[in-house]
Length: 224
Image (cartoon, rainbow, N blue to C red; front, side, top):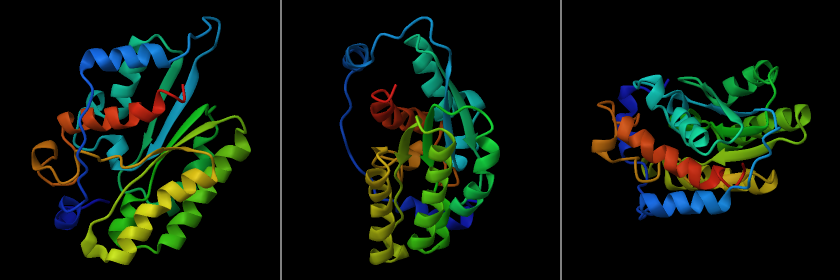
């Protein structure tokens, strides 16, 4: 589990600054970008598979970023149902162990958010890569037409510069190899910002999760 004793490490997660569009600009972009959906299409499943960051630890379920994504989807009248398969303390190895059970339900879009707990534990990047690839392969083998999104993460420099860099680069490499859409850094503009994190310094507040939802939506909207 992501624990309080690891707070100093998380607080040092690299912070990336970026300016967002205005609300009206965002709405216009979404309207222009998303294709008109056939009203006869059945509802498709979007599975968010990840850690406590996806589960929304410490938040009301309605405040977790996958729910905010569902709200956006509903407002656009798109035929997608979000399934929050986030689990606190999940490592890539644990995720590999439970993926087959999760695949019993149809998966049309798969968002993979795993690796943060591996990084905090200093698990070898090669091992995490192998586990993540196994998860990706399992999803593709069961549902060949699935669309896949990779959520990138980072660890602080005090984990060692070589490890931190290798960890960061693991996500774009896997995304490129597997033709996945990449969210460069899920915690962009939130990681290391005290006002946007709960007292543990690890998990975003409700306001923080709103930013996570935007980070995800920027990439996910093109997949839908």
